[in-house]
Amino acid sequence: MVCIASIRDFIVRATSLRGFSYSKFGSFKICGRDVDVKPGVYFPHSRRRFRAAVKMMVDSGASPSPEQRAVVNVLPEKDQVEDGSYASGGWKSEDGKLSCGYSSFRGKRASMEDFYDVKTSKIDGQTVSLFGVFDGHGGSRAAEYLKDHLFENLMKHPEFRIDTKLAISETYRKTDSNFLDSETNTFRDDGSTASTAVLVGNHLYVANVGDSRAVVSKAGKAIPLSNDHKPNRSDERKRIENAGGVVMWAGTWRVGGVLAMSRAFGNRLLKQYVVADPEIQEEVIDNELEFLVLATDGLWDVVPNEDAVSLARMEEVPEAAARKLTETAFSRGSADNITCIVVRFHHDKMDVEVSPTTSDEG
Image (cartoon, rainbow, N blue to C red):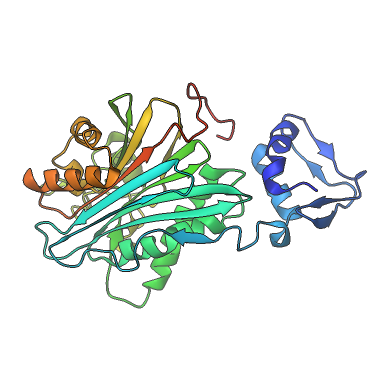
């Protein structure tokens, strides 16, 4: 019996062939399910098409069961900050490989539009850890929707284990579409950023839409794993203008003189120009990678990457590090909601690479 997680190498090897037929195989088992293969099934030299063919043969009955993909929320039920106080806490994985801390503060804003999420799941026995910060604008509905649905949708994606980057990209776009559908009969036009990190084994996938940000500390050096989606970024301006939009100065650079970011969830009225396509970076965990900081722009507006890493390194416990970062941002004059997650990697518990390598699943 061959399970989906076990055919990864087979898929890679198979795509190096010019083509082959299953016609002589008759039937075989995948995850305990008999799969009949009709004569003449031919797969061209295309990794994407081959995966699609495998997906067609291995239907939902052969996919990991709902129990295997159950998503566990590790945060307290009602932990989002509503008043002027801090919401903060911490979590440590059962195997001791990860610990994280979070801190969220309304700050000087009249309302709280930031949300954050920490979840875990298992697929084929592989632990998956998920972290995200979501910064709403025009209201909190989009950010809250992402907290409630984004990671749940990702864990349901049939190709998450085979092609994690593809799964993340498609899930971001699908969740954006679902949110817009859910808001069809409202007169609101909420939007939200999303900066997420997904850890699968020793591979860290960071996806970003908007101007929240992800930064890692590597041997004490601040390394950004996302690039803010600002309208005046040359490639973003070109994309917007090619779609028929305009970028203009209105206190800061804005799409159509309205929105100060070039990618976001929601924002129906600007959707033609403000897309929810994530930029994704992959990092292999090695002994030099100490921790990850995910935060909304309420932090990054006043705390440079290097300062964030220096401040977080002063605290051994990630909850204390996250709290220090939010307090520092407020003391430096941040006028926005401030939300931060710090994820620390415990290398004595992890199987890590001596040096980063590039995944073959680009």
